[in-house]
Structures are given as C-alpha cells and as structure tokens.
Length: 229
Ligand SMILES: [Mg+2]
Image 1: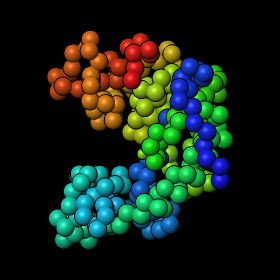
Image 2: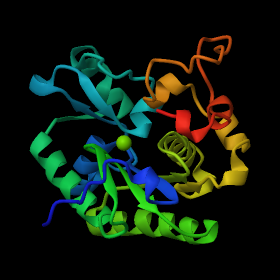
Image 3: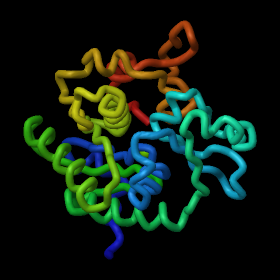
Image 4: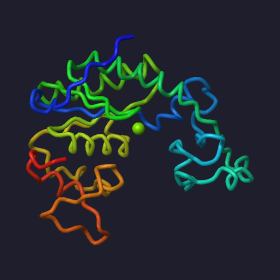
C-alpha cells in the first residue's frame, strides 16, 4: 500500500478543502472486528486499562467523560450495557493507513492531520463537491467498515466547522459543503465553541468572546480567509 501524498500548503493550489474525519476512530475500529459492539455504549481504555480514551456516541450519551477512570465505571458497566476494550494502537494505525490510502485516490493533495483526520484539496461546482463528499464517505465505509464525516469549504477552519455540522446533524447525511455564499449559514452560527473543535486556544485578536468566553462559527466564518490559522 503506497503512502498518501502530502501537500504542505494545498489551499493555494485547490479551490476547496475537505476535512475527512473518522467518527469515534478507536471505537469504530473495534466495531469492525466485533459487530456485537454496534448500537451499545463502548469505551476504549488507555494502556493498562486505566482511563477512557475513546467513547462511542452511546457512551457519550451516558455522560462518561474522556479520561474517566475505568475503576469507577466497572461496577455499574453491566447495568448500562457498557463494554470496555483495551486499546490496540497497532490496529488503529493500520486502519488509519488504509483510510488515508483510500482518501489519496480522491485528490493529488492530501495532508494527513492526525490518525483519523486528513485534509484533501478538491475542485468543482458545489453539486460536484457534494457528490464527492458522499462518495468519499461511502467508499471508506465500504472498503474499511469505518464511518467518516466530510466537511468541505474554502479554508481548513471552515472545513473543520462543516465537518462538525456533518457529525452533529444526522439529516445532513454525513457530508457538508460550505460554499462562498453560505458563510452565514445557520449551521455555522450554531456550531459549538471553537475550543471544543480543537481549533486552538488563541482567539483572534480583534474579536471579543461570547459570554462564555468562546468564539463561534458565525464570527469565525466572517474573517478573511488569509487570517485563518
Ligand atoms: Mg475523529
């Protein structure tokens, strides 16, 4: 399997950027090899089964926080139908390589951002981009069994935002494309705080935070692209 090609600054050479992110990567990898884990709360534990390092949506719904000690969950796990798996980083790394190799088929420009995320350079009309987003999602699921969401926009920051919308709103079908005329889209205004999306701790200098100290998508989306991180 050939390694994915990497582009350091793809935003200059492509019209749009897609962020493809595997949903609950560690849990999804475990589910590929054990289908009985579907539709029930699952957590993956750190080395020596100490703490929770990944949660399925069902486990999140139970209110289990990241980093929570398994010792404190173990006693009530059966009551909640909660399953724990020891982490298997070799497996996750191998699955990640497969996903990245598939993504590399869709673009000559790919920047692997983390074990479960990559940016791709894409070009096309909004309809074409919507179709490519769905195709990426369907292909990765078919070939690896891993569910992904796709966010497509003009910048990496907005692609991240679109990806969050695709993840949180089921009706969007797992793929969201933000065109140039959708900067004030309600989906971006309703986005969660930037600090929850891993966009960095440092707020833009010329903006004041919301009441809770966070910056929201609507404000981010109105910034000039050249000023995005
Ligand atoms: Mg992910």
